[in-house]
Amino acid sequence: MDAAYALGWTVVRKMPEGAARLVFTAVADRAWQANGAGVRQLERNLCRVLGKPAVDDEVRVLGKRVLRSYARYWLEVFRLPEYGRDRIVGRMRVTGEKKIFANLEAGRGVILALPHMGNYEHAGAWLAACGHPFTTVAERLRPESLFDRFVEFRESLGMEVLAHTGASAFGRLAQRLRAGRPVCLVVDRDLTASGVDVEFFGATARMPAVSAALAVQTGAALIPVTLWYEGKYWAARVHEEVPVPDEGARREKIQTMTQDIARVFEAGIAAHPQDWHMLQKVWVDDLGPAGPGGASP
Image (cartoon, rainbow, N blue to C red; front, side, top):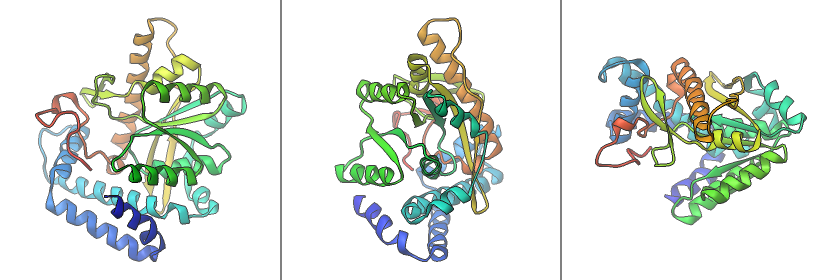
């Protein structure tokens, strides 16, 4: 697996862009036709989004669009180190970004909570290019060389990457926020015991508690962001801050805030379902003998 990613960051990033897009689109279409476990899980997820009881032709066609969008994401991941600042900033279409910058300029930390939508790697590169390098976390991958490769890639874009190691990572994220810095976290899926159950498209899903917990702990602004593609452009909407409730125990506040994030994600995904790259299980009642991991992308 590490060799495949190494090939991406060496060969794909140097290929003519048009040729690379044709290759990645063809790979996406082939995966859609093969209809493997990840594609079938994607289609079940899309049934939830569209309110359909079973996969039909509309879901299948939408699934193909999602796979092409996901292929574009990976193509851009491999080619992002080649993009200059003018392209990263110039092709970004953002609404509501003043909420981010105003908090940071006032010395208040900001937690940006994102789903697996559009190209969040590019969104991070955009934020860093705007003068706000940030901190994020990454799950440790095997082999270790693969994890190191992803860390090197993200650090080259202006990110500080912490290994996902529980309390240690949480404490360091809290330090960055208290110092008035931004933190970016992808938080639309967590089927572990530490996740928070929320209502999501009419059923119970489990999402990470970390973004809400950090806001409660540090007083940082918790701001959801949704992302999608608009032709050759990258698009993002920076939503309103999720406030910390005035009343309730800490756990109750975290529950309420995580549910608020889920509602924002729900609306964003419903508006741009073709750019939600979720080929894994999200809803609790989808769990079966395979356990929390579900189908791999």
